[in-house]
Image (tube, rainbow, N blue to C red; front, side, top):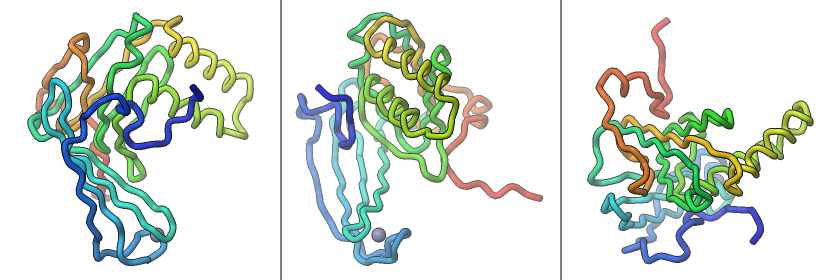
Length: 205
Ligand SMILES: [Zn+2]
């Protein structure tokens, strides 16, 4: 199997997690090229342990611009999931990341924070590691030795030769780890306030 994960439901080919898919046309202009209309897909998902989630994807048929987000219907409070990945099987655990989700892997120095260009995805831990690996491989002007070292660490983690901690936090409860092994905490209002939310904020000057 090659290591490229480009599809939305990259980790789910084996399951019947999609309950319903609706394709519609949106009478809106593409923010990238101005083309109108845009294609929209709404997928109703049935997530193990979490219940229903709604994934929305908007694609421009002209330039390929794509934006997507996921909302978990029954989990509304700010959450943090923490998982010790110490078994090779653990990289198959599913990850739901909405645009407001923050992912951290301290042992690998990885942090994926919400931002104006942040992407939602439903994948597994290996898929997240592959995304970071792809980004590292694309860094042309960085210190080559350092990049190669980071890629080696990621590969060891993927192969179960390096233990690490996978943390995902979301102030709106729209991100999750789908495993009994993951520890789930509901965050206090203070903790939730300190999380980045993936919105463009205007700070008073
Ligand atoms: Zn476009």
